[in-house]
Length: 284
Ligand SMILES: O=C(O)CCC(=O)C(=O)O
Ligand SMILES: [Fe+2]
Image (cartoon, rainbow, N blue to C red; front, side, top):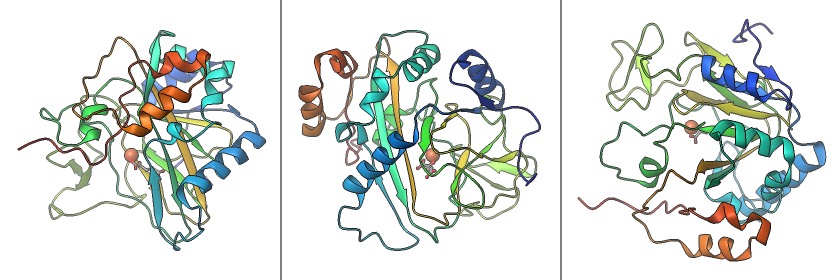
């Protein structure tokens, strides 16, 4: 299986965070091995089933997203009591003074094809129109994700474009970035072309185990690979408290409830949390 695999190392032990972050910076992604154990993986999957598919009625070839998983999950919060994860967060942000930024879970069912290549970063958007434009503008990893089935091109998971995290990156050879920089398409293709093929220069099919943490940088272009199994992923992102966000939406009731229920030793991470309002739209 040499297809779409890097010819350099992207795998790091959880005690080797400095080298993992150097890889993240150089190539735009890295994998930190065995961040959580198998029982923790199963617990997270159960929580995702409970919030996203309690009736088990998600159709084949479909997906559901939860955009505030940390408001529902207990297992995610244990990460902030888990020294290897805290070391990672501390190293990424250069400080312990962080607050919850955002969190999510995605559930996909077999039959879903590959997603469109895109970046999550919205830093170039001058006037935010939706919540992602407000939240996805900072120089912090865009993804610190657990792919709880692991990630593998023959099963499900994530693909990235190596080195697409650089500010001067102009798209893969033979492709052009879309006008809003959110995606790319073959040079000469129609404007509405959504490119969802692995065959792109620099494409890496990330191969990882269920307890591994898959990290990609703020700008890194990525796409979910075709799904051949019931696929669970989740992630939690923090930001330094010195990055203040004056959210244009009122603090959602679910965010308030989280802030109230967090135990004393975790409350510090709620200080600065904006919650997420997927319905917010900028006034015209
Ligand atoms: O499902 C995935 O693995 C990634 C989805 C994604 O990139 C997104 O929703 O922005
Ligand atoms: Fe994405």
